[in-house]
Every structure is written in structure tokens, then in C-alpha cells.
Length: 634
Image (cartoon, rainbow, N blue to C red; front, side):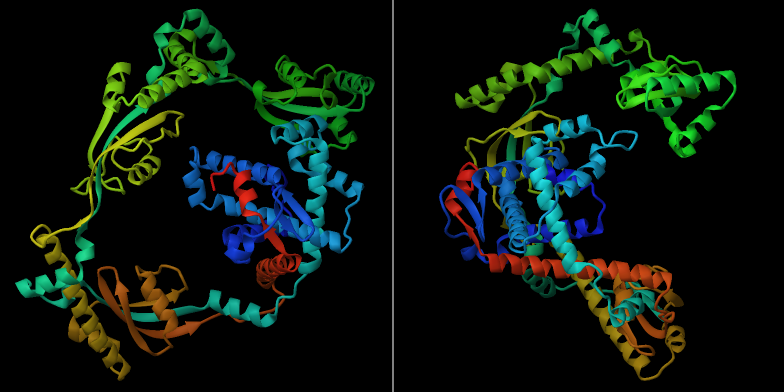
């Protein structure tokens, strides 16, 4: 959670540090090798980096935080198997090791961060600032509370983060970018080429006769894997969604009206007001300023300017009442007449004068028009708060009693989905996508890991429901006979023969161009379409040229010819020109390139430094303690 708080910083070096750490997360145990990475250590300490220990609690907390972030992003629950397949435990461990290694290095070098520097960093953090752009202590504590942190913990961690950034800054700050590198990148990115291109459509291969039985059999024998039937599974699925348990008819009109009143803004467009605000040190100063405004002695804007407010800072924006952070300000602003100046308002962040410059009327649908929708929402909320867990527990009890899903579905009035045959990609034997499988990306992998008769665990759906599944039958993958796939094999053989002839023809034309024949002559002789293409850039599409052709054009010397695939056909071309603008050091473009390359170089240098720091400090991981910290699931 701390990482997400401090990631709000836009410091370029901070981004590099996080980027490098992410690289080590992916690398995981590859940094040290598996045997060295998982060795030795006390039973109470999971990792020791130099003299810095990492406790089981730290590992457990970091793992749970990372797991929660992934689940929030993916909007579904991850099973231990799925988390392990993602390498989540190694990512967390590598992150902790990297941070501990940097902390060890800052300690060895005697780097220290003053209390004033930590305080300044916290006060400058955007996450802790209110709408006025000033540090808000209440918001600070609320943010830490949501993150599960207290002030000493956060200050201690922030001190470490600042020290790491200072260490990194001393290593990669103002790295020189050699001119030779800038010239090479400039040449690569700005070079433009021109080419004369002959297009060979599949028809250029001529008429392809039907294959003989021997040719077809030989082609099939060499490509059997392409015509193999995948494994198919027959499944029974019982899906329980909160919507299926909700009973809107049981919601009384009184309860529905109460819910409607509490959420009226959802049933239309709320009133919005354009609000201006001037802050004052106390109520007396605000009253004096209001008196000058009301008497016409000084306009509102002049009072704001005298308080040092830029005209852009005067407007809070056009907001609904619910969007105003300060209730006192919201109540006062929405009680004002347009163009009037409020009495002094004591808000959370001081005393203010308000003025409303525009009002956008709201429009709310009446209760009678939305009562059915409200009843559904109330019923659904009640199910999610209590009823769903009870229903899920009842189904789990029935499963424990060995009742089949069909019987459970019948008893509880739920629909059982029967899938006769589906492969791991979600298709039936005819190749059509199978419908009726909820959350396929979660359900199918789980079903294809299970076996017939397995006692499977329920899966959580994206919408908060649950899926129980049984594997009824497995048809293993098999080789299809030639008779079953004859039409597809004929099609494949024809395509392969067409490609072979096009390759041969393009080779012949390329050889003739290399011998000096004009491409215009070849186009006239063969009847193939010819086009001149200019201003071709690397990795850019141009005049329907395929990526393969563009790449080949840039690897072919000027004046030379070559060929490349082009959709279903091929293309033969001669490179006619190559141009690039001159490289001029010191230009705006060169400056932008320097900044970009410096960031990339800093990334590499810092990555090497972190790797060396870890190796020199020494890393020991107690595998047993590591598994225990994660609940024995690894």
C-alpha cells in the first residue's frame, strides 16, 4: 500500500527506481540462482540481506497487499495456484530483497535523512493535499488508516524511500549521453526509403491442380499436428448470482422511499453551481472584505487579488453539492442566490467568502418512475449483506453430503448449465464458441485442471457470485484421420503449393533485377502491378506494404532487390533511395532525445548497481520460514 501512495510522485528518478525494481520482480530468483536464493536463515527470519533481516510478518503483509492489488485490477479472486503461476510470491520476495539491499547500502555509506526532509516530503505529497492544494492532516491520517499504517511506520518507511532515491540520484544523475549514440538513434528513427514494388497475388502462381492421393497423404503425414482434435470436456455448472436470490417484491414501499431519498442524485442530474471562493485568516477580515464588496467600494475580484489569488485559483469549479469536500462550504454555496456573496463561512480549512456565478438546474426522476429499480437495488443489497453467504453455505453443505449439482439446482430453484463438449479455448467440436459458460477465463482453466469425480472448490465470479462445476466426461485429444479432415488438408496443401510457386517466381524476378533488368520491363512482361512508394519509415505502414516488406526494405542496400511475404501473396522490390535529415547537436529534438536516452541509460546503470549491491551484501532465504509466512501454500 505504501508503494501505491508514494508512486504518486512524478520524480523521474523515482520512476526509474520503480522500473528497475519491477525488472527484478520479473527476474525473481534468477538474480542469484535458485540454490543460492533459497538457502539458510533463522526460523524466525525469512530473508537476511547483509545484516538486514526481513521478518515473516513483513513478507506476509507485502504478499497480501500485492495479492489484493492484483485482485482489484483483475476484478476477481485469485486462487493459490493462480497466484503461484503468476510468480506472485517471488515478485514480493524480490521486491523486499531489493529494498533491503538498498537500505543496507545507505546504512553502510552513512546516508541519513533529516526530520525536516521527511516532513517536507510528506507535506508535498499530493495524496495528502486538500482541494486548496495545502497539506491536510486529517486527510493524511485517513489515508494511512486505509492503508493499514500508523504515523511512525509511515515516517520510517518514507525516510528509507528518500534515502534510496538519494543513493540512486548520486549514481545516475546527469549521465552523459555520447553523441555517437544520439547520431545512431537519429539515423535509425529519421531514415526514410523509397522502393519500386511488384505485387504477386496468389493468382500469379497460376492454376493449381488438385493434389494426387500420394501428395495429399504426404502433406497430411507432415502436418498431422495441425489437424489434431483438442481435448473436449463435458461439464455441469451451477451458477449462483446475488440477482438470482434477490426478491424485490419483499421490499416495502417505505424502505424503497428511504433508499430513494438517500440516493436521489443517482436518478437524474443534480443541481450544479459554479462557485468562487476567497480564503481569509479570520472571520473579522472576511466580514470587512464582504462589507467593501456589498457597498460597491471594491469588487469581488479585487478582494481576491489583494489576497494574492490568481484568477484561475478563484474558481472552485462547477460542482454538485455532493462533490464539495467541505460540508459547510457546500451548504452555504447551495443556499446562495446567483451573483450574491455569502456571509463568512467557517470551513474545515479556514474562513471563506463564496460567490455563485452560474447555476445549472438539476432534474430528478420522481419515485413512482424509478420505484421498481429502487426495489431491485435494495433487494440486491440485502442479499449481498447477508443472504448470499447463507445460500452459498447451504450449497457447500449439500456438496459435502455428495449431492450431485443437478439435485442441488432442483432443490434450490437454480438453473444447471450443461455443456456437452468444450475445449480449453471455449469452442465446441464444430469450432463455434460455446455460450452459457460464465467467466470463461476463470472457469475453463479450473475445469481443465480437474478430473472426473474431483471434489472441486467453488469459483468466484466477477459480479460477486459463485460457480460450482463438475467434470462429467473427458474426450482426450487425438489425431484425426485423413478422411475426417480431407477438405481442410486439400485446402492446406493448395495454400502450401501456391506459396511454393510464389516463392519460386519471386526468386526468379529478384535474380533478374539483380542482373540489371529494369523493374518496369518485368512489370510489363509479367503483367504484375508496379508502384513507386516513397517516404517509407521504419515500423510504419505505408501504401498497404506489409510489416515484413518494410522491414526487408530497410535491410536491403539501396539499388538492390529482394522479396518478402505480402498478405496472401508476395512482393518483389528494388530499393531506389534512402534519405535522412542531418544530425544537428543542441537542437530541441536532440535535447528531447538526450533526456529519453539518459533515462534508459540510468535504468540500465541502476539495475547493474542494485544487482551488485545484492551480491556483495549477500542474500539468504529460509525456504521453510518463507512457506510458513505464506500459510504453507508454497
